[in-house]
Length: 155
Image 1: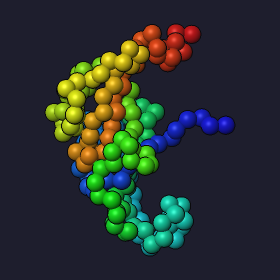
Image 2 (image 1 turned 90 degrees about the vertical axis):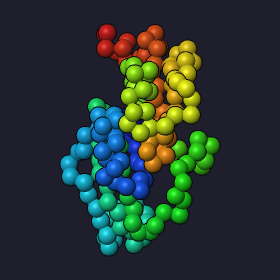
Image 3 (image 1 turned 90 degrees about the horizontal axis):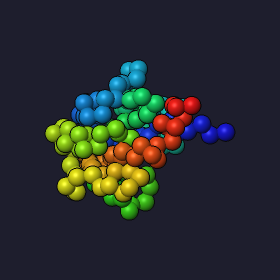
Image 4 (image 1 turned 60 degrees about the vertical axis):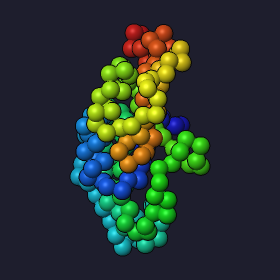
């Protein structure tokens, strides 16, 4: 039985900078100590990357976990940020309660957005932005009449 997604992992170029950004921008807290490995056959088997070396950190905001990695071996072959239509996981979405406020606040913390503001789709307001390293982050505010979590809380 699947209970839900535990975490999303993002490869970053500057671990400290991105940990600081996600703490300041979204209120993530570091869970435990940042970690790292090199020359570990055990970890190489887990991540399925022979001869790997990396540093990382697990962050948490509410029930959302975000794992940041900075690999040093092997060096990344793709250094540009993924686009929404590229193959693979391209973004994660954070549910917010006041998207207009978060949009302005996050611009001030270094996120960039190509749209002038969130787009109202009816059941949600949504906007895609990029963190300081270009990774896509979607912000979404669900309309109250469509938010199943509110219905669960009322029961």
